Image 1 (spheres, helix red, strand yellow):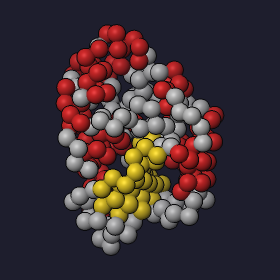
Image 2: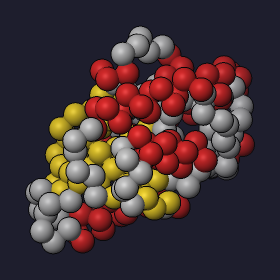
Image 3: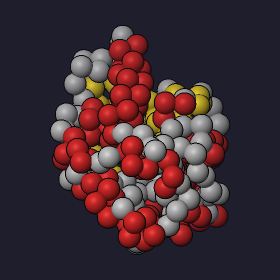
Image 4: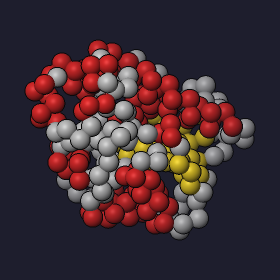
Length: 220
């Protein structure tokens, strides 16, 4: 078995402010996010993680580095461009409420029925493009695990992780968002027993270890 732990980055200033934060936007992690990362490390304590892969965007890379530190700073860590968030084009940095007023159907589609999302309207990246680059990377990792024994941790972003994970487990495009999104510093677990031919969801968006009440700005 190859096990994948998927982690959404810690909460940022733009998350708190309700701003779109894609492949070209970024903002600092909140001070409280480092406590959340410590709690995540406690949840993972005792698990032998062979490698950490992270999006190179600062909010994800810093989450990965802080998590590695809390786990003993001994796990190899690699930045992977294909793990970046959606390119959201002209939406980056804009407030949710402003964009919802300007593109109501587009935003509804992104959150509820990705098969209707028209990325070209905002000069952004489509679900198909994000799914192709992210799932290819994960499947390639699984294929390389000839002994079916690796445990790998991937730190990335809410939008692309949701699209990637649901696609890996065979959920059709129009239903990708049926279970909602992912929360900051959440943990999602997926296994494959056949080197990436099939994937099995073990746990979705676990935040029980965070020991706090989540609000709307924690999840996308």
